[in-house]
Length: 341
Image (cartoon, rainbow, N blue to C red; front, side, top):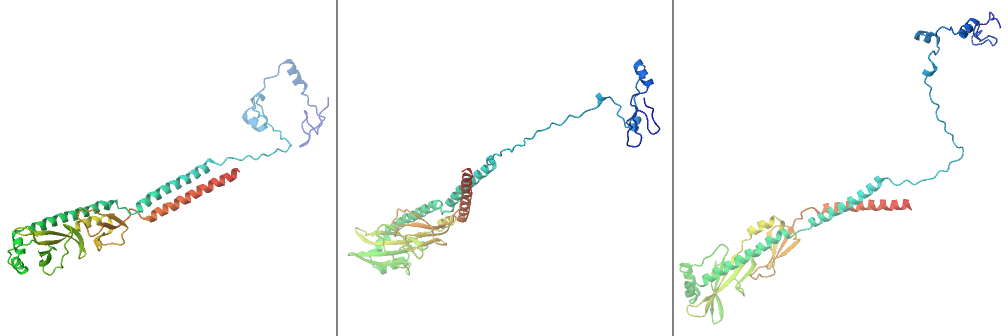
């Protein structure tokens, strides 16, 4: 057994800083061995926390030490891995966006058609007004016919027509013969002798000569208005026809014109030889036929300027939007088919 030298220490302690003496005996001393063999080794004293910190030793049992598991190793194959290109399906959002363009195109197209129908001038609202005009004209015709027949049946007129025109005029002047006149009325009294018609009286005196209608009444235009002309025969006191009376009375269409103005910015009554303006406006775009029982001078119709419900430009705008949306949808479908191919 070697004796420790002055330059080294027992139990393999370093002789100098950083060096270990290889010749040092690392076996425990004899007294320690004898105590171990005899089983009289004193119980191992636990080191306090301060001693552990000072010495730097780990004095806890090995069973209390938590060991970390070894990380799983992966063996990488050195061979070159073949890369396979897999075409990923198009995202669902692309298909949804395409369907959205389709729905937008269909919706805009439907709205454009509806607006186009509303932008067209509609005559439905004026049909009732045209029918009202026919009703007013028929009513005025019947009233004029009743009036003229009542005047013709007057005994005073029948007695005066068999005389001369001067006598008949004096009878009217002296109020022996009363001919009821309303505002705008014109009355012509003709004497018929030997088949010759002679005008013997006109009220008012400065009015234009009336042309007797071939039938009982006729509707015609006069002084930019509508008049009903009716005639009746004046019988003799005994038998035969002594003459005839012709009555022209104006037709008041003011109420009808006011109702037409609610649906049209202009209206004209056509078919009476000259157009009768009911509502001052532009060029008519709607014509509605008018049916009357009394024969007019021509084929009556109501020509009106109907304001459309909506502006036509709105319909054109939605149509353009529909075409654009459908074009985008078609382009996306073609692009997808090319990608698949």
